[in-house]
Length: 153
Image (cartoon, rainbow, N blue to C red; front, side, top):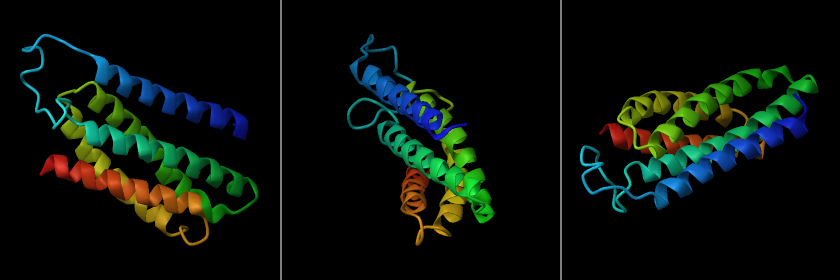
């Protein structure tokens, strides 16, 4: 995939997550429609979780694009980082979508996401001194892992 195509994909994913967050914030329903969910301080459960997952997606897409450029230049040591980021992107995308939908499956997905984010954070941390994209991804993954574990507690 060309870098331009990758950036369009990233922009589309981020725009979708942000649009879903905006729609969730604006949505109203009958008072008893959501009585079975735990609600956060602003009446929306999982708000912090969807936000940190969104940050992970943004940082991860940037990191993956950087890894692909470096892999194309023959820096094969970036392959494990790229693989970990790809896994994280898949899991955090699902997490963000479930959280925004206030799905009852969110806690289960958060448990998986905590493990995947910890793995991605470790992989990115190995390159954080040389690549700011990896450092940003590691930081975002650490924050998302923390938020996911807080939900499980």
